[in-house]
Structure formats: structure tokens, C-alpha cells
Amino acid sequence: MKRIITLLLGCMLLSGAASAQFNVNTMVNKAKNAVSNAADKVVDKAKDIADDQEENVGKAQNMVVKGIQKAKQVMLKVDETTINGHKYSSLGDFNPEQYNRTATGYVTFTSVPEGYEEFDSVYTQLLGRSPQGAASMLVMAIDIYNHNAQLGDSCIKRVATPGCAQIVLDALARGLKPYQPTACLKGAMPENGYQPNTPYTVEFYASETETEKSGSNYVLYIDLNSKGWEQPRRTIAVTTASRGLYKVKNCDDLLMPCIEPQAAARK
Image (spheres, one colour):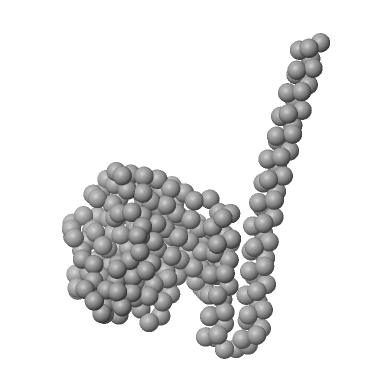
């Protein structure tokens, strides 16, 4: 009899725990949907207020995106890893199958990978599995090239499509400024000689250009936020690839000359 009662109590506890977990998941999903729906409504309202003034529409949309960043950061899962003592993390809600104007992405890291093995591990295990991660790794690869051309060449070819990789390498051969990749990092600006905040952070917003389908792959357009150019949003095209990875398909905006630093830039 005691055994039966014990079993019944155990079943009740398990049932209650499962119900509680279900309720938590339901609440989180409802919160996510509420944030997304509210953001879409505010964006639409901003468009109505601004009428056909494109510049004002863009500013209003940017304000909306920034306004919901903290709410998203609380609800979204942060993916992270540590390799060779260097920490890397990625957070974002870009979806290749569904365009979301309010989507954002963030990548933070304590150091640029040292050597191809670490670079490839970071790419395949973590950052290459998201649009913001792949785009950030191209920024790292360009910085690596400035210190070791042979290693940088291999890294660029790893994270970019063949055509894009060749365009980047050609730009570097022509003399791309060494502070160009640093200008992509949060906190770096001409006024401080492109000295970024630490840990290093790359910030992304959804581009106004919607996702495209190319064969069996999707091409996403994401804007890297930077103070290194007069137009701070630098559009990057990222395509889905094999094994759940992403590759950069176009990054022409990052190769355009950025503003000259007003102080000695980080080497």
C-alpha cells in the first residue's frame, strides 16, 4: 500500500513539474511574440507619421530596433564557447526563412583567433552557424590578414564564398587601411583612433533588403552598425551553406574607405 501511495505521489510531482515547465515555455513564447508584434506595430506607425520622408522613416525604425534590444537580450539564448582561453559568444534572431525588420544580432569576443585551427574551430562550432557570426568572422579574418597575409588569406576563403573572398583579397592587395576592420567594432570611432570597447563587440540590424531565395539556399542582408563611415549601417549579404553554416556572399560596404582616424589607430 505504501509503495502504491509513493508511486502515485511521484506521478503527481512529475506531472506538476511538466505542467510548470510547459507554462514557463508558453509564457516565454507569448512574450517573444508580444515583443515582435509590438515592434511591428510601432514600425508601421512610424512609417505613417513620417509619410514619404525616407530619412525619417529610417531613423524611426532604428529607434524602434534599439528600443527592443534589451527585451530581446533577456529572452534570446546566448551561444558561447571558449577556445584556447579566448571567449566567443553570439546572440541574435535572424531567420533565413522569415524576414524580420526588427531582428538584431551581436557577437562578442575577447581576442581574434590565433592560428587557422582556432579560427576554423570557432567558425564550425559556433560563429559560422549564424548570419551575425559569419559576418563577424570575416571582420576578424581581414584583421588577421593585416598581420599575417598567408593566414588571413586562408581565413577569408573559409568564411566567404569564392567570389566574395577574391574581392576582399583584391581590396587588401590594393592597400585597404589597417584600421578598417577595427572600425567595425562597437565603441571604435574616428575621434578615438578606432579604439573599440572590450570585450570586442560587433552589432547588427536587419537590412531593409528582404531575404532572397537562391536555389536551395537563402541570402540574408544584415547591416553592421559602425561609426567608421558617414553612413553607419554597412550592408552585408550572408548565404546559407552546407552543414548548417553561413558564408559571406557580399561585403562591398566594408571595403569602402572609412573616415580617417583623428588619433593613432590600434595596430
